[in-house]
Image (cartoon, rainbow, N blue to C red; front, top):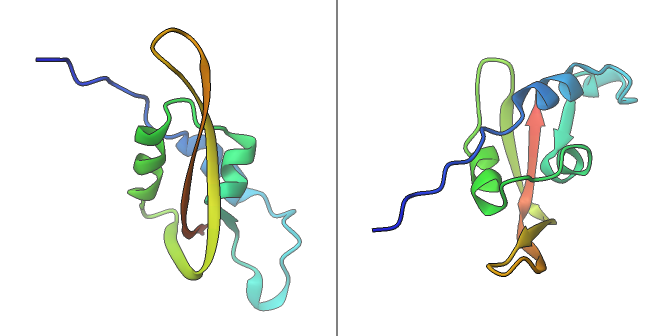
Amino acid sequence: MAAIPKFDEPNLQALSDVLGDTSTGLTGSEIESRISLSELLETEPLQQGLAELIAYLQLGCDVFRIVVDESRQEFIHWEATALFGEKLLRSARLPQVIFVR
């Protein structure tokens, strides 16, 4: 039986740093910090592929909540390494995921 590969937890510190950044330009009723999953992954690309993407989708804590906007789609892309070392571009299409503080 093959061993289940281990992967690192998503970078919660990076998410917390981005949500704590008040330079987002939001004003008035948009004062709460927010970032979409695709925006977060532009600054912190996936290192563990699909497993890490799924972990981000399962996040939630006292510091932020997850909002899913099914009226918008986003494409998430990451690079994977095949068995013999060749690089592969992988992608997933999903409803927009927004982390809100």
